Image 1 (cartoon, rainbow, N blue to C red):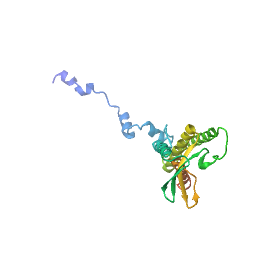
Image 2 (image 1 turned 135 degrees about the vertical axis):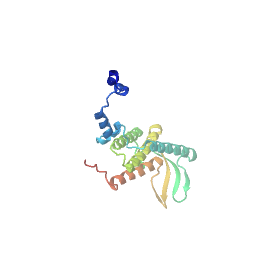
Image 3 (image 1 turned 180 degrees about the vertical axis):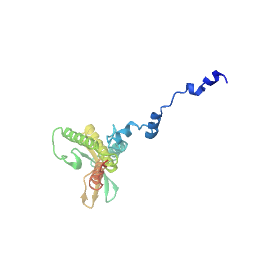
Image 4 (image 1 turned 90 degrees about the vertical axis):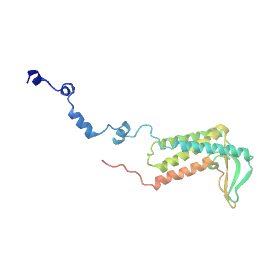
Amino acid sequence: MHADDQNAQPDDAAVSPPADDGVAAVAEADGPIPPAQDALSSAGAEPAGRSGLFWRFALALIAIDQITKVMVRGAVPLFETRPLVPGFIDLVHVRNEGVAFGLLNTIDLPYKWVLTTALAVGALLGIAYYANYVRREERLARLGLSMILGGAIGNLLDRALQGYVLDFFDVYWGTWHFWAINVADASISIGAILVFADLLLVKPHASRSV
C-alpha cells in the first residue's frame, strides 16, 4: 500500500462542516418560533388593534336605518299614518327634535339641535371607551355595543343633517301608544338589553393563575 493512500481522506469529511449539535437539539426541543401575537398572548398582553365591536354589523344597521327613513319620507306625508300591522303597528311620519323617547322634544331652546347632537356625540364616545374593555369572548356584549353604536350613528346623522330625527313606527295596544321609534331606536334598545344581560347573567371570565 502506498503512503499516499494511507494519508488520503474521504471527500465528504473534507468539505462538510461539523454540525452544531447543541443548536439542533434546542431547535428540535423548542419547535418553531411562535408568531409575535402568540408571544404577546402567552405573556398576558393584548394584541394591538383589538376591537370590541362588530363593525360590519354596525354599518349594516346604519344603512338599514337611513334607507327606511328615506322610504318613509317618500311614502308617508308629515304627521300622517299608514297601517302596517292593524291593531298593533302603524307607519307614521313625525319629527323628534329632542333625544331618545322624545325627551326635550317639547322644550323650545335656541340651537336645540346643537345640544342634542352634542349629547349624541358624548354617547358615542362613551360607547367607544367601554368597547375598549370588552374581551373577544364576550360576544353578547360586543353584539349589544355594535347595535347601540349603529343606532346612535344613525340618529346622529339625522340630527347633524336635518336638525331632527325621523320616527315612523307607532306601536300601540288599544288606546295605549308607545313612543314613536325608528330602526336606530330599536337597535339601541335591543343592544342595551344585550349588554345588561351580559353583565348580569353571563359568568365573568376569570383569568387563570399560572
